[in-house]
Length: 339
Ligand code: BDR
Ligand code: CA
View 1 (tube, rainbow, N blue to C red):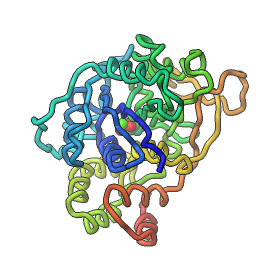
View 2: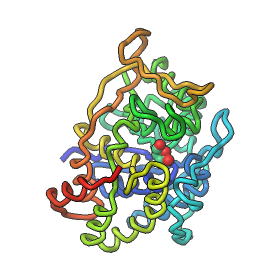
View 3: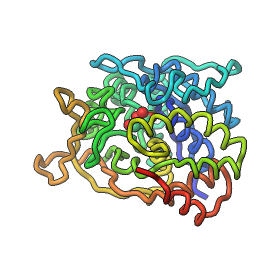
View 4: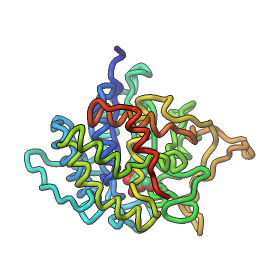
């Protein structure tokens, strides 16, 4: 078996971040060096407390959690508690974890780890799966650009290529929350010599919208694994209600776990390479502008994922987080998304 890939998960838990962390923690292909938290769905401190709750649930209190940036680079911070609940975990109100506490200094932690990996062969470098706004990463790029020599790959849940936004007609939340940070990170991948040849893998709404957790799937989870199923039920209840009110679907779109699945298995999504920029002003604030026709002849700084197989993803998620399941049952239960 190949050695586990070293990874840091930068996130803003968040209900779907929580599911993504559960998936990552249940995946032997990953060696999770730490979890860094950024302000996004909830303030960074609350997100870090939530990360600890997930670690406790998964019996993985060996992984450190670091609090990162508490406000976007330029914009006033706008949380997404309307979507994720006042505690960020769907108002499940699980008790605070007191055995272990979050540490401060997420950006410094990222820099330290990446610096240590700077001279390592490509396969031993450290990758980042980014599930929230890119503020921590932009600060890292500003303050410690040389540390990026230790970066393996960057997979980011964010943006949108052809699908409509979820914060405006064109903008997805993570990039809309801190468009300047996202813009700087994409620009850095086009310009910094230390990142030459690397591309951000953009898992945007085009693919994540395909991933819908339905009430039937949730019931199947509870039948197969009552303990995990109940935890997921408690944290997603609020999310279900939000999706019904906001999007008119019975079920909830779980964006972030797809980025983890794709990082582990590249055949989970497919797409194309392109130069991408992020709009930082006006009515298109936060929009990802993907030069799919190469008008600008600029460095291809991104790999834009446009297609996925929802059934394969669901089987991947169930098998790891819940336990053995039947594909045919999953397929039937997935066929019932009401839109
Ligand atoms: C993204 O925004 C957040 O609300 C979710 O956690 C996800 O990372 C989807 O737009
Ligand atoms: Ca997130």
